[in-house]
Each structure stands twice: as C-alpha cells, then as structure tokens.
Image 1 (cartoon, rainbow, N blue to C red):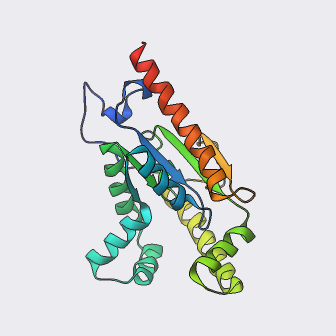
Image 2: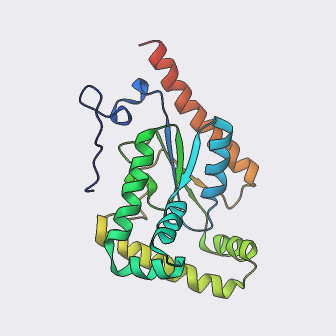
Length: 208
C-alpha cells in the first residue's frame, strides 16, 4: 500500500505502537454486502463511546465533492484507480486518529497495521441477498444479479490494485457467520470479543 502515516511519536505513530501502549483503540469491521457489518459497527461504536465512520460514507462524501451520483462515481472507480486510493487514504487518516470504529469491505486490509481489532462479518450469498432485498424493498433476482456483479468487480479490482484476495480471512482476529444468529446474538459475540481484547490490553498497560 502506498499509504503511510505522517505523524510520529518517538519514531512511530501511536497507532503503530504495540496494542498495550495505545490509549485510542481502532476497530476495523469488514465483510461483503448484506453481512450486517454496518449494523454491528455502528452499535459497537455507540456502546464503546467511539467515533464511527465507513468506507461507504467516504465514497458518498467524494461523490458530493465531485458533483457526481453514486452510480457515476462507481463507474468512474472501475476505470480510475485513484478513486479507490483516495478512499483508502481518507480511511487510513481516520484510523490514525484513533478512538474509531470503521467499516467497509477493504477496511481491515487498509488498516491492518493500525487496527487493534479486525473483525470479518459474513453470511452465505442467499442470506445476504434476502437481507438486501428486504432492506431495499427489491426483488431477490435483481439483487442477486447486482450482488454477483458487484462482488466479482470488487474481487477483480482489489486483486489488481492491491494484490488482496478478499476470500482469505487469515488477517482477521474474529470471523463471524451471522446467518444462524439473531442481530443481538451476533452482536453479543462481537462485543464480548472486542471488550476482552481491549480489556486485556488495558490490564497489560497497567501491569507491565
């Protein structure tokens, strides 16, 4: 990645220090469309008293700045890699500030050296399609076709631009399939995991 932190503390940005030496946690939540990542990221931020942002919000901000619709910017991004790189730059900038939960398909990879906790939320394709169709009041066939095209395009672009295989989840601290869980059940697992990791780091910092 050609994105590097610009600020240093004793030679390193605070977010690049060992976890036990940080006081501004960063949580990255990734996953495919319809997995529920935004729902869990927002709730986690609210309950932990952290800021929230997403790659989707950054994409919308960029579209407004360029005076383009989301569809127009999406088409441009397929041909112009600088769109994705700008989104990644802004994502990294937010992550380096700390005290933040950030969600997005590629967020965990972009913040791999910054995030204290990296979470991957997923579900089988048919489950995700049904969720999107219900959420957007659309037909499942239409959503399926759109989702397959979007995921194929993303997979190809991420591999070409970054050398990232989005099917490889070895980067993540927690991988959770939400298909057989209620929203609350899934969230409780995520919250308990994050609280354990951050709590352990706090204990380590108090008792070096």
